[in-house]
Image (cartoon, rainbow, N blue to C red; front, side, top):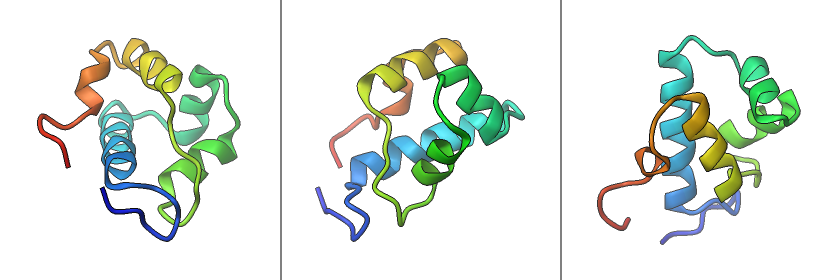
Length: 81
């Protein structure tokens, strides 16, 4: 796992990209996702910005799975990175 200058690892970036893709696919803005996750708009923006340290935790991933009606596993790669 490579640690990037932001403090995000490859797996962190993978999860962020999976969530962003689903968010866009479902036409959900960062603001709406923030409300559904019970976090601030700026938190979602910071997560999606690779230069910021913010990242999703397991509780977020579980809640995201409920929001997008999928499995928490859908946010993770098939094989280790």
